[in-house]
Amino acid sequence: MNIILFGPPGAGKGTQAALLQEAFSIPHLSTGNIFREAIKNETPLGVKVKSILDSGELVPDQTVVDLVAEELKSDVYDNGCIFDGFPRTVAQAEAFDAMLAEKGSQVDAFVALVVPEEELISRILSRGQGRTDDTEEGIKNRLKVYENETAPVMAHYKEKGLVKEIDGIGSIEEIFARIKSAVNS
Image (tube, rainbow, N blue to C red; front, side, top):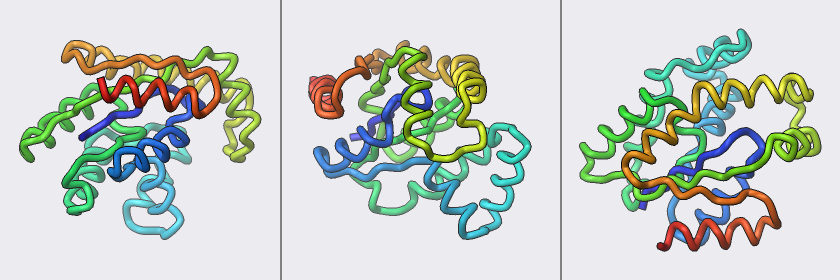
């Protein structure tokens, strides 16, 4: 089963991905985690990505697609995966669909966490991850980028009838119960 966990920064994707991973016994692939690990280990990809992110740009689609394609070669993903932070653009979504089709697979569920902007800002400011743009203004800018660049991906999967919008407000357990119910339906 391939599940895309989707939503703006602060929606709770990482938290819910961990619960889904346990419930469905499939791995969690976070492009953000892969980037952070590559940067920390100063791999060639890490050096390239760090310079892109430091300049405030988005990592180019082809770089992200290549990274995910390389990661998916591992047999740990043979029974599916929870994708978090990917695809982020329609071009990435189209490349991802083609990549899965080559493997005789597909996206089974697109779970979109819906959370009001004020709640997202509050969550990001309170989790204290120390990003340089973890200010109200910086967060609003990230949310604007999300709306412009990433939200069209949802329309791509809506056309395929795969989108399940989930209310992202409530306890972690309540939100997880909604996700699990939607994925199982």
